[in-house]
Length: 235
Image (cartoon, rainbow, N blue to C red):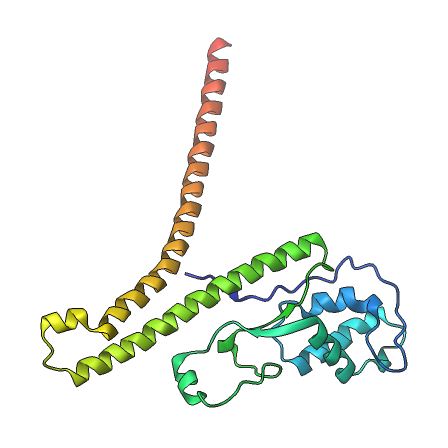
């Protein structure tokens, strides 16, 4: 099963950022000197654009001589150039039915079930350690996205199979075995199980490492005890 860590934001730290106080021009545009800070603020955030821009202004104020020139509009424009707000999940079935015809606002929607994350167009400007953290987080999000999609497809196929069974109450065993809607349920279930097998394999691997480490530690303790006993015997 996916852990809560898979849903967490990166929250790249600003600690250790060495930067003088940059000058913001009269146009209010974010100067290039502040990009290394803004990139860390943006990457992995789930906030809607307006909230993220306001947070960024507060964070950037420490690194600017005249923060009052920064505006929500200018910072928002820069954020949209640097990153894309991606929707990793399609929401839960009930919400999908209610909003089937409604188009989501990718910048301001706040529904947690869609798992919004801001993803930088390039992470080359991030320090190697932070870039590695982002790559790992993105990989987990893509895996979670695929798992979620397979579950939604399974639910949909079960609904269709249920509907088919209601419309064919007298179906023979032979017909049941060959019905496409019923066969699809098994196919979709297998796709879901594929992800869950991987998670179980990873869990068992961790457990095996723990058991081996405990056995090694116990063996070391026994060896040390035997050494002390041998030393005492000789004395």
